[in-house]
Length: 204
Image (cartoon, rainbow, N blue to C red; front, side, top):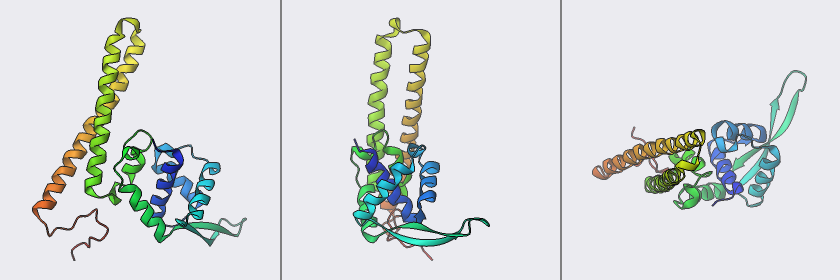
């Protein structure tokens, strides 16, 4: 399973693909858009940024901003993704391995599906659905085996958990059907550009 630092690396590079950001704005976007980082602290973010700087995947630049009538102008460090960082990010989102569909990592990868090729998206979705289906069946069998030893509230809680997994499995199935239909449409029209391909140019 991917380390939290690896998932944070993917998230930071993905957000910096959209626009350069200073640390405060970057942390806010991580908190707002990616639930897995809802409690992310600066004590975790800045060491991760230093690592990305050392590896040459991002760079710093100073931007002067007006913070208010009493604070005046203040220079803030803005982080930008480099060409090497873009290549590394693309390699990360193009990998369909377990790090892309396990708990704690799937949500982040899914947030950047627009930058992931269609075949990889489909493999990630299918593996995620398979894992959840196996987990759901295991949990159901365990609940049935232990039914007589569990009180009604514990049983209700376990049932709620199963329903949540069932809901995600249905959602994944809808996404998989949509991806397959989209792929078939693309194959039927070989001249139609793939919207997931960054090289694709929209028709004028």
